[in-house]
Image (cartoon, rainbow, N blue to C red):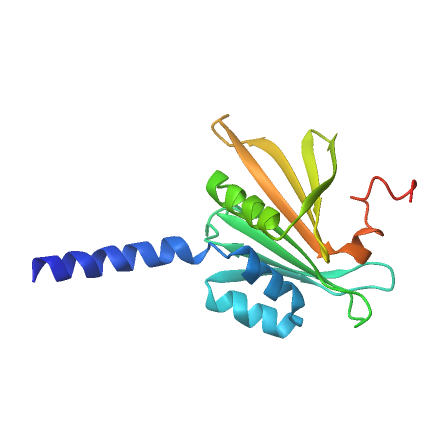
Length: 179
């Protein structure tokens, strides 16, 4: 009886801790959804919608989500932004901010397993950028640091995900003038 109670307690503690951990495959599926489907999918996984902006004729709109956001500040374990144009001819873009090195390594490993290759790397605004391209997708990974309220430094990883053709038109494509 004690063993069953301990197992149930452990499972109830472990489940919420892992629910934020969207796999890279799940992120790609969110990117393909319309905004209503994306909101429902993420809300089911304990993400909270924190902001919504309509697209304009020259800018993408966006839905911003936070996972495990503090009720007293703007801090959260992760942030996710789904960019959409409102035009079916333009693909959705996705950006996720994470703070766990293990999750960063998991995503990088998956990109490489999908035959993603380094397309470019550079430093801009105190962040290190690596751009991986696969056969259809581009992943822009930026790594930077941030000081918290107690002057300790944390590492922030951002993954910007879009289709290869769409990437050609982004500010992340530093080689566009050469193409």
